[in-house]
Amino acid sequence: LEMDPSAYKMHFALRGEWPSLSFDFVRDSWGEGRTRFPHQLLAVVGTQADTPENNSVQVWKLSDLGKINQDEDEEDQDYDKPDDNDDSDDDEIDYDPILEHATVQHSGGVNRIRNHKGIVASWSDLGTVNIYSIDVEGLCMDNIKPPALINAYTGHPTEGYAMAFSSTEGRLASGDNQGNIHVFEEDYKTATPMYTSKESVEDIQWSPTETTVLAAGEVGGLVKIYDTRAPNRSMLEKTVGNADVNALSWSKLVTNLLASGCDDGNWSVWDLRKFEDPLARFTCHTTPITSMEWHPTDESMLVVSDEVGSFVYDLSVEEEEGHEKEDLPPQLLFVHSGSPQTKEVHWHPQITSCVMSTAYNGFHAFIPSNL
Image (cartoon, rainbow, N blue to C red; front, top):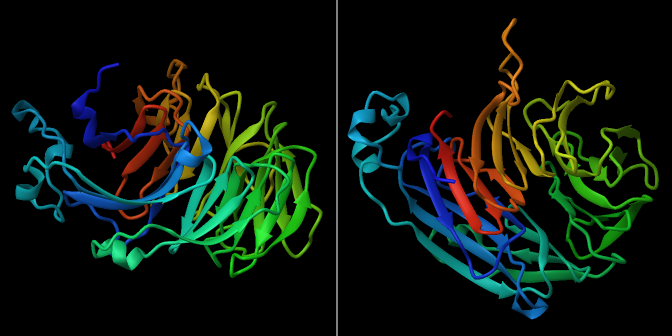
C-alpha cells in the first residue's frame, strides 16, 4: 500500500526495538483542544520482546510533530487553510520529530498498559499486575524519569489482558484468562477478587459516571455489567455476538452508550438503558476487532482497529434513501491501513482528532484531513 499524503494533516511512523501490544496517552499541562502545529504528546508504552528479561515499560515524550506539506496546487482544500487558532508560519515549517524516553525493565511481555493521572498499570504475560508512578509534571518540563514501581501484584492465578482505571475515582480493575476480576484499593498495593466467570475476561470498562459500576467483555460473546457493591454476581448480562468480545468502549459523553467489538470482525453500539437490540451493528471488517474508543469531544465518533488497520466512524451519518447498498458503510469516514496486526488505537485526549495506533511494524500517529 502507498500512503496518500493528502489524506492526512499529520502522519508520523515510529518503530522501536521491539513490537508493542499496548500503549496509553498521558494527559499533559499544554492545553485542551490543541490544533496548532507542531504538536507534542506524552505516552506510556509496554514491549513484547524476544525474552522476558528484555521487556520494558517506557515513558515517551514525542515532540515537533509537524503538519504534512501539501502540494501547492492543493491550496483550495479546506484542510490546508489554517484555523483561527493556528499559526500559518509554524504550519509551513518542516519539523523533525524528537522522541525522548525513559525506561524501566519489565518482567515478561506487556499484554496491556494503562495510565491514570501518573499511575501506570501493566499486565505481564507472566501473570503479574505491576503498578508504577510517573512524574507527569517533570515530563512536561523536560525532566524525563523512568517509572517507579509501587507494587507487583501476584494475586491472579494466570495472565490476562483486561485492565482499566475508573475515570471518576481512579480505581483499577484487572481481569485474567480464567475469568477472574480483581479490584484494587486506592493505594494500589492490595486488591480484592470480586468476580469469577467461566470464560476469559478480554476487556474491562468502568462507567464514566457511576463510581462502582464496570463492564466486562468475555470469550463466548458475553458482556456483563457489575457493581462492586454486589460482589460475585453480575447486574446485567447480554450476549452481543457469536464470537469472543475482544474490546469495549463506554462513552464518556453519552453515558448510556457502550460499544463492543468481537473476534469475527463485527462491532455494535448498545443502549444500556434497554440493552436489547443494538443501536448500530457493523459487519464490514473481515479480521478480529482488536480495540475501540469513543472520540473524547465528538459524541457520535469512534475509532476502531482490526488486524489490518484503524478506522474512524461517525454514527451521525445517515444512509441516503434509495442509495445502493455498498460493502463499506457511509458512517466510515477514514481508513488508516497498511499496519499488520494492529493491536490498539487511541484518540489523544487533548490534541483535536489525533489518533495513534500500535501494530507489528510500529506506531503511527496521525490526524486525518477530513476531521
